[in-house]
Every structure is written in structure tokens, then in C-alpha cells.
Length: 228
Image (tube, rainbow, N blue to C red; front, top):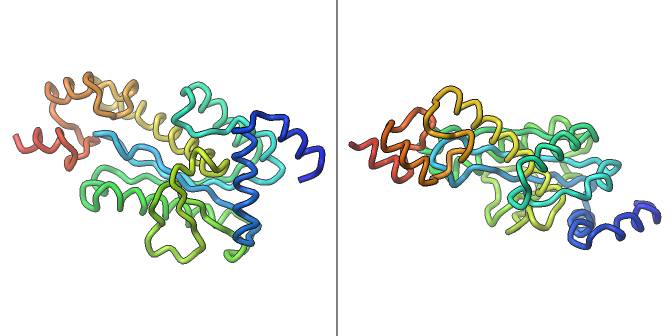
């Protein structure tokens, strides 16, 4: 980064600039040229998929993306705006779903990590670096299992790393769009508004209509309703 670019970044709010510098320091500490952020959205809902995303931010795009932050701290409108901006600036990403059947079969943690791994392996094909030059930064305390490349698990990574925060925005935006499609397929549950989370409105509709194919049968109270 040039002296002018550093000055521009230092003129940003400290938190926003810090996300970029965190990634730069992480690359230096691990002696790599590229950092790929990994995050997921949708571990907690009663319905819908978990969506994982792997993101690589080219150096020429990083400064223009100073607004990036943890997706949970942004409005849907802000996430959509940044989603488009990142694509326009050439941010490289891949995503993967873990559908309810996989979640119920493997449990939510394993399904989430497997979805992350699929996204990570997919984005590798799009990155112009050798495997030894890349570090995967994974949000949360768990690393991806049986993953043959360098990775680092970062608790609250989406609040520290620009790359992980970008992945959180991609994952949340893609999942929210998918929940709106599901809402059209199964009206009455309110998927477009609550995105599958266990709100009072959702639980009331669930008790009235019963579970649909997008509900996670291993999650309470869906599990007890399925038993009935």
C-alpha cells in the first residue's frame, strides 16, 4: 500500500481502517500473499439452509471497501449495497449451501463446517496464487475438518477481519435472498421477513401449518411437531 493509500485509510474511522490492517498484519505474520475470509449465515434459524461464503479481496479493491463490517451490524439495505459494490470492484467469492437434510443428518456444526469447506475449495479455483501463498481465515473457534490448506480460526473474526466481514455480508445477503424465494414457495410462514428464525410469528405459523420441507427436523420446536 502506498503512503497516500495509508493516509486515506488512516483518515477513515479507526474501526473501519482496523479491519483492513488486521488482514495485512495476518498475512505478514503467516508469510502469505493472499487471505481468504470464510464465514456462514443461518446456523440459528428453524428453517432454511446454512450459507457459507469464501471471499478474496484484491489489494486494489480493499481501500474502496472501508465500509465493510460484520453483517449483523448492518441493515439489509446496507448489505445489499455493499454486495453489489464488492462484485463491481472485482471481489472474488464462492458460496455453498448446507440444506436442512444435511443439517439434520450431520448436526448443525458439522454441516456448517462442511459448507465452509466446499466454498473454500471452490474459491481456490478462482485465485491466482499457489496454495502455499494462501491463508484461510475462518470465523469462529473451529477450523474446517480434513482441510489440506493453511487455515486460522478467529473468534469474532467478522468484527476483526475485512475478508471475514466481507464473507459474512455475502453469506447473509445470499441466504436472505434465498429465504425470500422460499417464502414464495411456502407462503404463510413469513420466511421473507424473519428469514427462518424462531420468532413468535414463525412459531405460531409453524404450529398452525406444521413443518414444511425447509424446516430443520432436528431443531426444537420443529422436532416435537414432527413427532406429533
